[in-house]
Length: 355
Ligand code: 3PG
Ligand code: MG
Image (cartoon, rainbow, N blue to C red; front, side):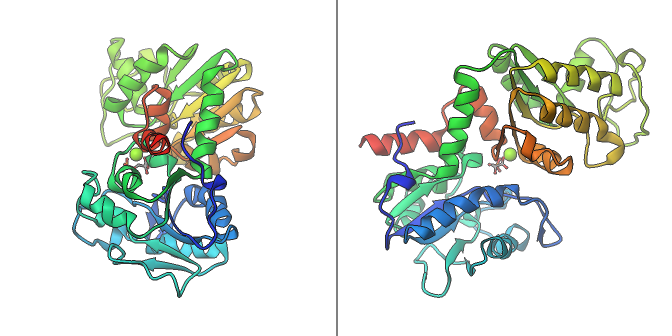
């Protein structure tokens, strides 16, 4: 990557605006899984320790632009961040016309997706965002596949635009796994979004030695092979071979034999890429497959990368974080990187550095 890096810049006394991916699940006004927040802490601490005046931006969910909606407010994230940092983090609601940095250690700007023009990467909005800073730092790997005002446009207008340490670490880890991977390389692509993942699988099939479709997308393959599968709301937990599945059955996890087979594959792999659980692991009766797979990845000596919101939650639930080689904060961004696509928020930093 040829982008400038935050850690190489003189941050002393500068207004540093950092775009992070603090898009975390919120339940009943509380942060339900804070992996992405924890991943962003070293960047914030480095900027503060270097004497920077730190402002943070993030999106949360997909609200309607131009409308404040409390369920998408970053207020719970500001509180959580404050506890983790042991510092005063102030949420700034109206921040486009200037940010007051005097009364807090860190300012968190309210959800960037409340701003009209964010998704369209509007140049006027991008300019207004950039006016708040001396240095723009793109650190949101999880949102690097989006060309939005706060991830892309702002870089063009900021006096200096550079890559944050989390973004750099994510890209280096993924390059290490993919440029010259230890073989055999196995990818597990689970989760529910079948339509977007089919193209990912097509690209991945040319890169990896073995590909395991899991979760919702596995059902597509089973149906394509001529077996019956129907998505229905009523489901009792039963273990069956694929040949015994009826049209009105719903597959919510892999069975024990499949799990053992996948686990055996993990033990001989050189590299493992894991995006998406293989069952509805949030409910324990459908979690055994994801647990066995996760534990096999943890026990394997392969270089392993796990990424994506649900995958991170599974890694936390089964307590395997310390035995996975690299945990990525990216879901969609991780998959687009695996596909070999350019990440627009990274390309713009490289263009700025060349300027
Ligand atoms: C994610 O959770 O995948 C990222 O935060 C990006 O969110 P988005 O898919 O709403 O752009
Ligand atoms: Mg997403």
